[in-house]
Amino acid sequence: MTADRDGGQERRALIVGASRGLGLGIVARLLERDWHVTATVRRPSAALTDVAARAARLRIVTDLDIDDDAAVAALWSSLKAEAPFDMVFVVAGVATQAGTPAGQMPRDVAGRVFQTNAISPIRFAETFRKRVAPGGLIVLMTSKLGSVSLNQGGGWSSYRASKAALNTLARSFAGQYATADWGVVLMHPGWVRTDLGGRRATLDVETSVRGMVAVLEGRLDQGPKDGCAFLDYQGQTVPW
Ligand SMILES: NC(=O)c1ccc[n+]([C@@H]2O[C@H](COP(=O)([O-])OP(=O)(O)OC[C@H]3O[C@@H](n4cnc5c(N)ncnc54)[C@H](OP(=O)(O)O)[C@@H]3O)[C@@H](O)[C@H]2O)c1
Image: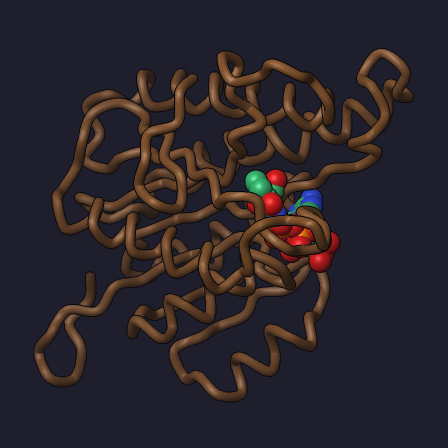
């Protein structure tokens, strides 16, 4: 945290993948909660620019594709002299050809889904772990669909597997840095009406992001916890 003008404490967040959907909603909710937010996008987002026009505490960084190591390194360099973040939240994700069974999907498409949903978030966490404040959180957006034990009916198989891979990589990452003074959270936002979630989803963005932010602020208030938590937007633990 950094001291504000009145001597209080202000929280700082880095939100990765904020052009639309849940990332955009998380930025808006954190600003309502008086956080200072740095939000990244691949290309300019009119919706995020609109939020920035109304919020002095929002800084937008463009040209950040999480699959691009050089872009991630450039972001790290541009932020390394600043105060650390209380929360680094990698929201970006894809569900390309989610309806195609994994065994029938072109290899390169399946590979890209795994890169973006599993490998890139962990690489981002590895790069940015030294930019997390003591007692802070690295949060990775996963899905209940990534739960192996809850997978009864299949469907969205490559997406599911990519999120299951992310979950396992996040547990390994948390174990690798077990003595760190920050924590790791895998977050399931619920089934939310976004481009990815579709129109039939049960939740609106506002309900999901209000829940997630409340859960994460509560977690920050409690202080660091060991291991890797797998939580939903209501704070319930999701089975692995
Ligand atoms: N909606 C749901 O029901 C639901 C449920 C469970 C989990 N999730 C997860 O929640 C996260 C956000 O999903 P959403 O529903 O908000 O989907 P969305 O509306 O489709 O938004 C996806 C976001 O990810 C960004 N993104 C994709 N690939 C990227 C890359 N390589 N580098 C940087 N940014 C990238 C997109 O940026 P561009 O605008 O540049 O494409 C966009 O901001 C995803 O990880 C998703 O798997 C969603």
